Each structure stands twice: as C-alpha cells, then as structure tokens.
Amino acid sequence: MKKMLLGAALALTAGAAQAADEVTLQLKWVTQAQFAGYYVAADKGFYEEEGLDVTIKPGGPDIAPEQVIAGGGADVIVTWMAAGLAARERGVPLVNIAQPFKKGAMQLTCLKENGIESPADFPGHTLGVWFFGNEYPFYAWMAKLGVPTDGGESGVEVLKQAFNVDALLQKQADCISVMTYNEYGQVLDAGITEDQLVTFNYLEEGVGMMEDGLYVLEENLADEAFKDKMVRFVRASMKGWKYAEENPEEAAQIVVDNDETGAQTLEHQTYMMSEVAKLTADTNGALDPADYEQTVATLLSAVSPENPAITKEPEGMAWTHEITDAALQ
Image (cartoon, rainbow, N blue to C red; front, side, top):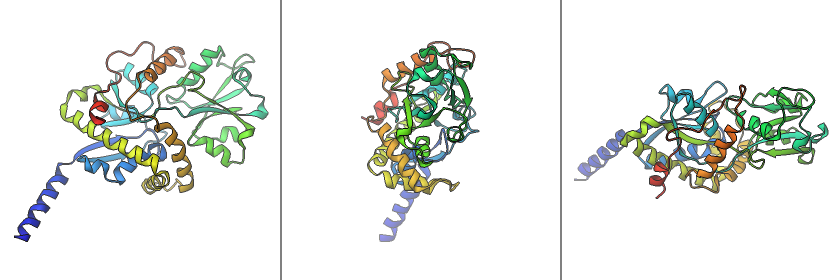
C-alpha cells in the first residue's frame, strides 16, 4: 500500500513538473542587482510555486530587449518606458503590464572643479550621455532648459558615453550619466568624494521617465492562457522583489551566484541592492498613470531629428492594470 501511495505521489510530482508553463524573460542589461527580484523569485522557488519554469536571459550592450521580443525570443522583457513607447510607435506593440520600479535612478553627475554647480552652468561644457534609448530624458531636459546640444559657448557638447565612468575619470566629460545603484558608486570607489560632486536627478528636474517595467506584446494579451501565465509571473516576481528589499545581502549573493561571467562582486552587488531597494520600496508593481503621463509629456517635449523617441501621443493600449489587478488582489 505504501509503495502504491509513494508511486502515486511521484506520479503527481512528475505531472506537476511537466505541467509547468515556460516563460522567457529578457533583461535590459547584464546580470546584476538591478534585476534581483527575478533572480530571487527563481532561487526561492516563487516561480515554481506558481507553476512556472522561468528562463532569465541577461542583456548587454548589443542586446535590445524590444528586438528580442519582436523576434520571438522572449515572452516578457524588462525595459524603460521611453524605449517601449518608441518601439510601439515603430510597429512593435509593447504593453506595460507591471512597473516594479516606482522611482527613477538615472542622474547626471558632475565634478564641481569643472565649474558646474547648477544647470545654468551647463553651456560650454561636455556632458556624457548614454544612447540606445537612454538619451531621451537628457534631450528633454536640455529642451526644457533651452540649451542647444550642438556645442558652442551657448550650448553643450554631447559625448556618446560608454556604459562606465571612464569619461569623468579621464576628463573627457565634465558630467556623465550614472545610475544611483551602479555608476555613482563606481565614481566614489575611484576615490572621488561626494563633496567633490554635484548630481542632478532627472526625476527631480521634472523630466523623469519610468524605468525597468515589464512589457509584453499586445497581441499576446488576447490569449487567456498567456494572460494567466503573466498574472502568475508578476505575482511571483513582486514576491521576489519584496523579499530582496527585506534581505539585501542574501539577494546580492543570489545575483552573484547567477552571474555566469564572474564579473560581479558581492560587495558591489550588496551596494547596488541597497540602492535598488529604494526604487522598488514604494510600489506593489502596479503602474501609476501619473508617472506614465509624465514620461509621455517629457518625451513629446523634446521631439527633434536627433531625439525621435515618439512624435505623437501613444495610440492603443500602451499599458494595462489587468495583469497586476489579478496578480495582486
């Protein structure tokens, strides 16, 4: 009898494993604490509890999540709203289904010794800017300030910055783009103290844009089975994020354990996780429509040949609460 019960239990276990729904998540960047919630959800079994088999694909400088999902290489991606809306206008109908990051982390950090203490000091200086969709808030900010971006004494010189802090350290730029949870720490690690820096946060300057949201293709939301998978995926992911907030050191170790390149260190990932937790702490994952409207307004304020993110108000379903309403009830 015991053998029969054991056999039945094993059969049920095997059946449950076979029935797990596969989900492929494409990240915006490499494995790091910026995505800790997803790695924690996988490591702690939160996805498995929801009947999901989740594959997490790291990103990188040559990987555009919008192109990956358009080509069928992912079910859901992590990207910024600016890139998502730009892709939508160009024929890739992305929809934001959840927004784990409530606050924005992108900043412009300058050396005070270069004579910059406020935005009024920008003209005549070289500013490092990330591209590949990260340049949109910068151009919106310059448009708001009325500062030309074609160089000259009354304008600024734009340096297409690499995804590191070398441009500041090597005096190639007077200010560079940083994320609060990554490059800003690298500047400090290089021996530059906070009192030697002045930092401008895009959100505080009124040109903030929604970062790290979860996006799917609109056509897939017509499939009830797909929607059900996404409800379970978002629920487990947010559980992972909240666990990471409460256990930053453990979350950092999980990230390091999942870094196949071996490039990440526990010390830096712990720092990153402590900063990322500030961005996810005040949300349950549901998008705030006001944040969406600010992003759209910022993008439309800076339409130009060099900054063609979007040229008109987004049409159709750019975001939905349907998934988070079901996941978080």
